[in-house]
Length: 186
Image (cartoon, rainbow, N blue to C red; front, side, top):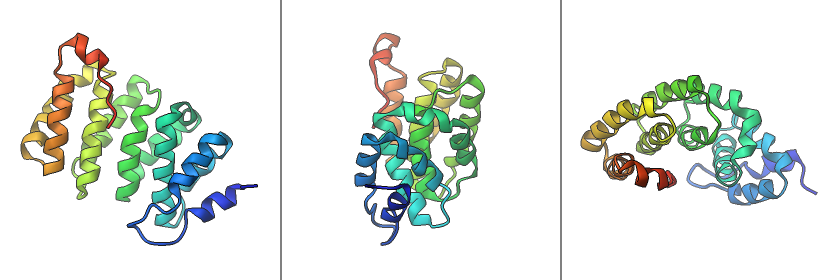
């Protein structure tokens, strides 16, 4: 039988180029959702490899079961602001828009994702662009400033940012009937 200590132990070891057993852990947590809290707690583990892999597994689980995020909303929003590790940041950029966010929460996330656009990691920047588009898709007041940011980074960003920006702009600028059918998934 798997315990919470087993989950954390399975996230250890190796190097940053490997996701280790995070796919297996995500599959396990999808079967036994009681372990999801262990993944969230591991986002603050002292070991950066454990944090990275826990974030990867939590992101994969939340794609299938966003409802599991709800009890951890406050912690995830706090961590979104505090995270400095690039792997944690890019996974949080994928996770946070899946939360049921209030207007205030969306504005808070909007500000943080703008800061993420200044990260040295192109992956963090690209994930932040996606997160901003996801927020704008549920908050019309954010649509205009997000479109402005996306246009800027589609013009001036890295190759990955330009490619993602073109896709996001096309989706956000679609006629309202078509935009309603667009899913903001990667």
